[in-house]
Length: 492
Image (tube, rainbow, N blue to C red; front, side):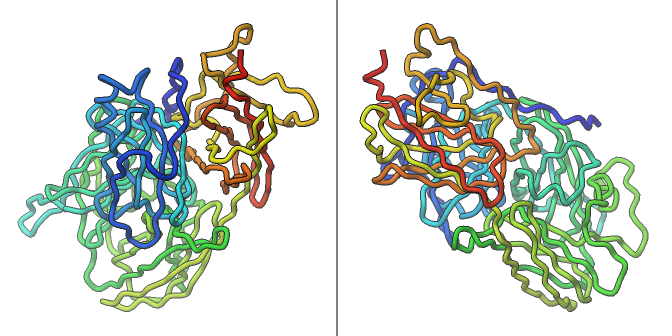
């Protein structure tokens, strides 16, 4: 099996110049999921070709949005307007992994964005690329040794570099989920790369395997699950975080149990993906040998989209329960588990974000621009339009102290050759984080973002697009990024 991390799909060149991105009221016909707890709205613009009419328009109507980590059916059919705008309502709050995908053509895009209660997060332009598919069955054996399907098993895929990656590195990465149907079958679209794929069900031992996925190909992967022992208990609860004065769910956090009074180690940097797979029971795995008693069961799981978790098959005893995710810190609780009982444990972490804020004004009048869209995109995002940007020759006292770009409306001004940012694509292990909002009456905006390098773009109707690079945003850091947009009517 190839362990090399495969590069993500390259950026699309020569795309049309897009109009203002939709946000707020209107914006098409939303498809809603019945809210469960706090939810928000995600909007953006899907770019499927040189036109959103005709054949391209027909392709666009097949796309769905998938919020990964939902326990229920996690796809939303998008009603996309002729200009490509889309809107998703009922998205659980928190740092969510969302894919916009068309299973028929195996095209799609991946976005990681922070959804806030009752608010609109606009992720900007989304350019689908070719994806690969993981597909197979989850089964178990009955008392006669015959295979039977396991419905509603959770399939979770996380990108890895290779099997030497550690379990504690996984919470920082995007994850992709689906649920098996009544026949135990599943299909999951993911970007090209190598993945740790888990099959989990409350009544069975979890099983894992690694696969390498290529674009426009189907990678088969089957699991055979082993029932959990009966004389055990369950630990369940939530992982939340304080974010800007709000208590927000933390999807994808690692939750683990360390037995007290025993030398049994907690999940640590010493436990690699390869070791984890070898210790789990997956009879489908080639060369599988059932482990002898006592079974070495690693007691860990990851939170779902709403921050909830459940660990079944926990032997009776006293444990230190730990919740952890990079960028959110960790929390510990003491818990006693009894046979046949459920114990609730809730964790509260502290989000560790940076802030980008500023004002958007008219370059000719200096007046603030209300309703301008400001989007921060992780540099190297494979589903953003990097072509067509040109570096701005700025001068004067208000010249930004960082690289500044603009995107002329007619494909470039005469005498100014294209100098699009030379940015390496993000590998699949790095989350393509985005954040977006609209400016207020005074032209002001504010974005909360995890540490990293960002390309911050400002877009307003009747104005030329503009962007600035923010390098190395740190936890607790506040960076001011102001924009003076040039009206398109003044551009010769």
